Length: 163
Image 1 (cartoon, rainbow, N blue to C red):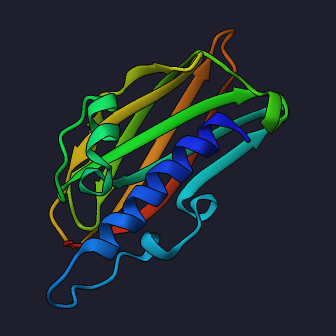
Image 2: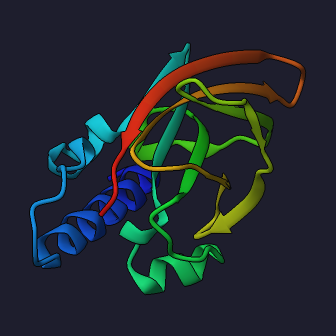
């Protein structure tokens, strides 16, 4: 299985476990909680290069995952994880890139995310966070420039709710 998919599924599993453990009233369900990991991520393919981006509330991360990423767990903090890979999924290798991201809430001000490299198990991903009020919908605009100058963009939106 592709390592980025493994990390995404781990995050999605943590999210599902956290939501299942919540008791009390019935807050609005987070749409991503019931979606398979493949539907939680945005994917862009250009030739044999695949770009995957996943956005989720950091409070949904298991404590050990949040610690590994060096991120505080909070409902209003959204984590964006971006991976750039080349080759077939089972054999894909991480590609170094310059990744720039903005997040725009509905009716709000655009924020630029500061991404940092995250190296794990021989792979390279880019991770950053953004604060938002809840509930909210964030639109992510991502620009990727790979070594050698090839560039691509992707855009996607995600809804976030109080937990």
